[in-house]
Length: 108
Image (cartoon, rainbow, N blue to C red; front, side):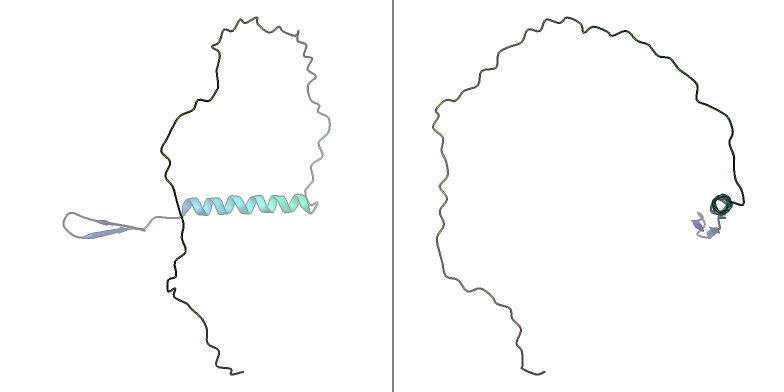
């Protein structure tokens, strides 16, 4: 269903059919029935004759092209530099931490 509001304030409700759903259900039911008929042997299909076509393929091997490549040389190394590195320290401090527990009153 679709609801539309008109410019004068009235509301129009349009009900749409489920035609696509019905057609899909019918097609599915037919496919299930056909599958059952073949599975139970009520229907059978004997295909006689027929063959794949014979295809002869011949090809001559190719050659890779000759290529001259000129490239820059990559130089990798290290140099000594002075950088500022932050110093991180840890220290132990005693604080109050909340605790959670369950008290058993001993009843069984």
